[in-house]
Length: 514
Image 1 (cartoon, rainbow, N blue to C red):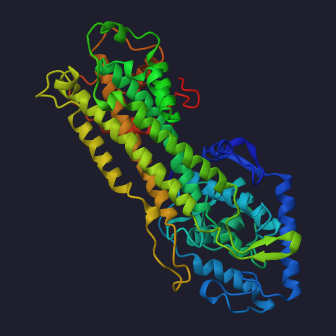
Image 2 (image 1 turned 90 degrees about the vertical axis):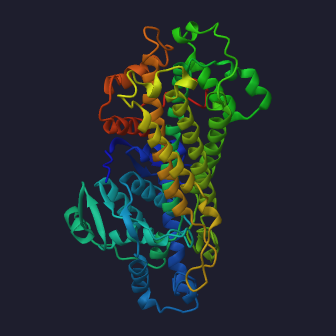
Image 3 (image 1 turned 30 degrees about the horizontal axis):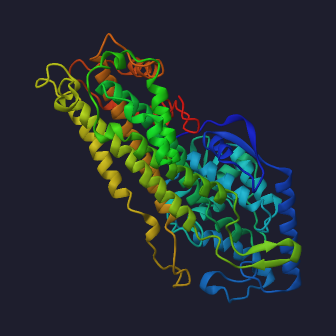
């Protein structure tokens, strides 16, 4: 499991107004705290639940059973037992544990949703969630078990069980029984009040956190792909005429315009390589070079659309029923249905699938001497040496795997809970797939980066542009020129990690500049 290093300082979460930038910093390891407005909203909703219980009214989730058992009235002296049993019975997840940065996002999103003041939990519940994070104590949450409605029940139950001293907690990289971890931290197991268990396990926070993880990773992948594409244009001695702003302005697609501007910015400088073939007479390059703005720009537009959806969802209240303190009213609805997240996750998946696909095609051109004019498979003495032959095959394998993963989860549904929950979003599975696609695409981009820099070596002593040369130098500091066959897997893994860490995401696609 990856370790996230907590950064000093704290992001203040103002529920309803939390930005993607704030969530991005939390994903990267920033601490966070709740605004004063959030604490006040918690109190108002909790007091409303107390008044509702005291009135003797029957309210779903407060003093009734759940799902198909919603008509069963629970006596007041068993409400604590009801909420505890809900958490324990729903802790049914399977699979590998979610990564620490995803768990941190889940907790942040749950705090935001609860502190909007429509869930009815006491301040104590949120205080305990924040206390765990402050101590670097992360509940162990299995990745599988949610269908994306009625919320992310199973994974959120595992999050909640840790507060009760059940399940497991990772405390500073040591996996412990939750009861032992709480004891070490000096925390008593939480005793839940009316509705608190339901508020904790209802909601789209797991699917949203996973989708945000895919989005934030995908942003780095896409930006790195633009850099890799520019390097490949140089290695191929391609033309930048296709990036002329007039071409893209007359179409008007914003992502396309931004990517074309970024490519122009990367290639200006001037490039010695560009000057070396200005009179070659080449008019058009293969689509994978020429149509980068159209393809990667369209992917950028999809990521931006998904980002807007996820920012709204991150600030939303998605449990059930919802408490409206002004009227002491509890309304049952369906905000837990994660269809918006499912669509966003599928958009991220499709976008990054295509970013990887067009990258692999550029690598294929570079290793083909008939297309590129470079040595076969980018190595001298080919025949004895296979060069980048199988690196390109690896990229092709990842692209093909991504095609399979990109089938949309949002069009799937399966009835659950004795057909009471008869249509579900599958957002959690879709978001997990999107994350896998992003990481696979990072591997594809990593292969292209190494192949492009290898191709540039054959144009020495002339150099690439002033903005691309530092990228070449950074790669060559870790990966030497491929003079003859050697063990390449570790270098490919380094390149993939560098893409995932954003080392080569040097373009600002909002400004279209490097």
